[in-house]
Image 1 (cartoon, rainbow, N blue to C red):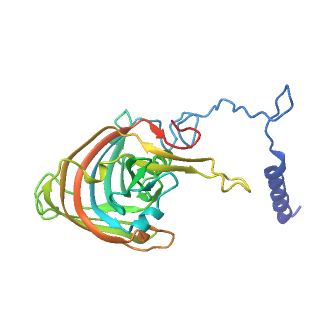
Image 2: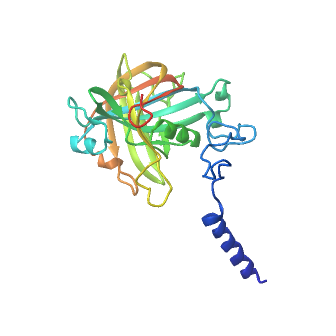
Image 3: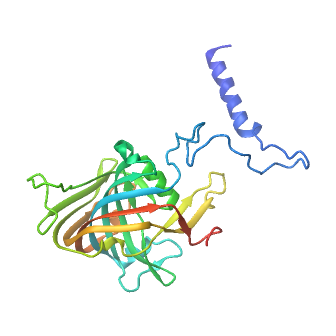
Length: 306
C-alpha cells in the first residue's frame, strides 16, 4: 500500500472512531447508556489531571495573594458602562459610568511557601472595575482583565474573572532612595501600561499627594460572570455554566494607601473593546498594598445559586 493510501486509511479510520465508534457504556440491567461518572484514577484539582496530581495548572485552594497596586479612577459614559453589564446587574444610579483601572504586581502561594518559587508565584494583572448594582446592593463589575501567567488565568476563569493574556508593567518603589525609583509619599510619580498581542491597550500616570484610609478600588464586593460554553453542534447558545458570582475574599487587608492625581488612556486594538469605555474624565490616582485568601465562591444566579 502506498504512503498516501496508508494516510487515507488512517484518516478515514480516525474519522470513523471519532464520529461513530465511541459510545457511552451501557447499564448492565437496563441496556440504557450509563450516565454515572466513574471514579477518576487521575488526580488533581484542575487540568491536567495526572498520576501524582502535581501536574495540574492550579492546585486546590487556599490561594493566598499579596500585591502592590496602582490605579486611576475614571468615568466613562453611562451608556458605555451599561452596555458592558451582564443580565442580572444594573447601572449604579448614584454614579453612572464610574469605575477604576487597576494594575497589580502579585505574589501568590498555597500552604507550603510556594512563593519561594518566584517564577510560578509572581504575576502582573490589569483590570477594570465598574460601579454597578445587584438587586439593591452596590457592587463592582469586572468587564475586562489581563494577566501574564497561565495559572492566574485559570484561577480567574474558575472564579468568573474574564481573564486574557497580556503584558502588564508598573513602576516599582524600593526601600532606599534612588533616582531610579519614586518615593512612596507626596510627589511620588508612577506609571503603568498593559498591552496584548503587541498592541498597547491602556496606560496610566499618577502622582501621590496624601495618605488614604482605604484603597479606592476595593470598597465594593466584586461580581463576575462565570461562563463555560458548550461544544456541541446546535447548542452553542446554551452554555454549560452561566452564572453571576460574588468573589469571597478572606482576611482582606489593605495598607500603605496613598491618593493623588491621575491620568488614564485607553487605546483601540483588534479583538478588544476596552476603548469603547471612552474616558470622559479622570479622578484620583492611587497606590497601595493588599492581601487576601480565596477558599470559596458565592453563586448568585443559576441552578447552583445560594
